[in-house]
Amino acid sequence: MTMQLKALNLSVYRDANSQADCTNGGVSSTHTRLQLVGYVEHSKGIIDPLPEGVPTTIDPDHDAPVVLHVRHIFGENAVSLVPLTYDPTATAWRFQPGSMAGGNYATGDSRLNELVASFTGNRFHGPIAIHDRYEH
Image 1 (cartoon, rainbow, N blue to C red):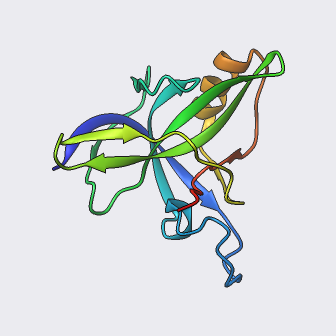
Image 2 (tube, helix red, strand yellow):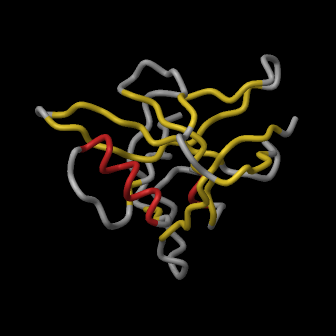
């Protein structure tokens, strides 16, 4: 099932020459592009849509949608990118808590920097850790 969402396209940064996969099969080990489709504050699991973005068709068989996960840590907000999983019985994307950093990062355009700054209260320029490792 495909769906139309606002999304920001992100580029994955990883060592292309390395045979190691520290993500344990995470989405950033198989995709070079991710689609940021929303954000999740803390561990509530409620996916809020992006305030702006490019209308994008997301296909669960081929695309890699992620959300910006905003957590309150030691008095400050911290962000990471977490992949969504597709639930075919509910025909919906789900946020799965319990992810950890897999060693890869992603960057986007200035809209990503502005979105991160709106949550953290700080100017932001640089890559964001992709938390796509799950222990099975």
